[in-house]
Length: 382
Image (cartoon, rainbow, N blue to C red; front, side, top):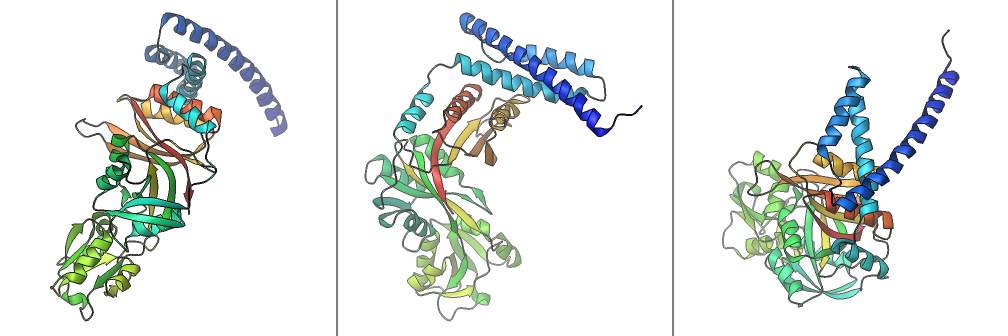
């Protein structure tokens, strides 16, 4: 006699009750394992033991269910390791810094500040700076590295830099400098980017043989160069610097890709206002500071992680985030220079270190990852 849906669900509920009881028993034994490992100085991860269990249970599950059994137990191992890590946790430098920052949350960022940014008047970084600070005094720097050095040497407390573009991807040089200087993100803003092709008055598009701009802007306009193969793309320090260069040049065959503000600022004219590959082009700018500071309302965490070069290592890290129910808004990989087929990952997570469970999660990721760089906990303006 076939069961109806209600009867099937009742049986499933009964099985679920048994499973959660067995799960509780298993996790209690995990505590005993954690105590033994702590006493004997053993690591949490035992890959050989996990592999043996997966082989045994997948064989017992049968051919139709073996892969599902493997996935189930890999998740169970991840939860068990997280539970062990919580019991064995020793205060680390990262955890100590996070707890100190959580206890000293600042009400708001100052409205008036001396801020370094790369470029010159009319740059997108200037617009982003003016969004983050109501009354900024801006120090213009030639390079990203100069911005970091200005903050490092105490010339100014903040710096504003691009970190990611919706078309061209992450600005990896800024990530590298964040790690080098041990700086932190304290605020971020999404800035709409409207690239225009600008040239001196009277110049026509058919006259142009070279276009100058920042390398990111040139990549964001790759379609334009594909349709105009005779036009050379030349990178410069900044879009505003490029606009200034085009305005001062004696040549009549040069143009710049820059903002509408640069058109009026440098006495140029728009040859085309549709040079971007997409009309929905945004750049994320970050505000950096030397110290780990969290301001009220911070709800995004940025990390750099290097996972061990073995099967399942990234999955294990991601599973901890999943178990916490946190939303991962960015996951991007980048090859590690000098290492074959090994990658560094950029993470953005919607979370706050004011939550003790989040602080424990970050410390757990630190223990399991080859390297973890905590970039900051901040609020992003949209």
